[in-house]
Image (cartoon, rainbow, N blue to C red; front, side, top):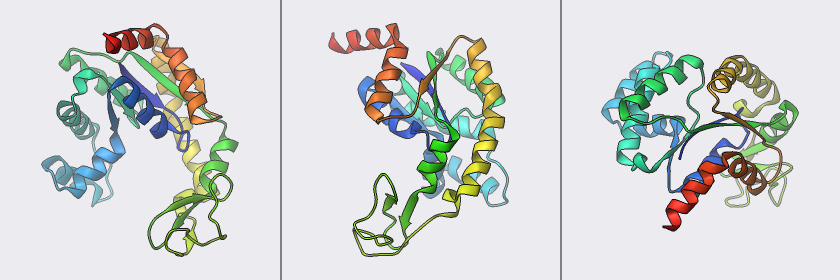
Length: 225
């Protein structure tokens, strides 16, 4: 099973990708996590990426693809993979296709998790982070026992700049502008499936599995054998 998960920030892509990866025994490939890990561990690709980041430039698509390919090679990506956070544009999708073609494989399905902007804003703007230990809370869905105070270390909770409502709205505008052509690209290719991203993670997972249909059944039968 080789899947791409698309969705706006806060749509729950990471959660669904982890659940799918565990179910299918596939590699969970989160491009942002790969990049941060490579930079932190000072790998050759990480050092190259950092040279761009230090001067405020975007990391080239080719370098991100190298990170993804390296991870697939080391994480038994031959059993399948769930791409989370990449591609974000048509040009990246085309580059991904070329890289996969070189491996003799292709994308099976592209799952777009659809969530209204109002729900995304509620999810993200309600996040609170502990200044001391980094624990995460949500004022509605997962509030601390005492308002503004971390359960773990009694540290002060604050709202990160990225989680402020105005910032979230701007991120959603950028996502819509970049992703609309990408959705159409995969729709024309006959790969796109859209699922409702509002609900419990287990409910959304069932929608995805139902959308996968025959592919899901084949993977299940293979694992039983």
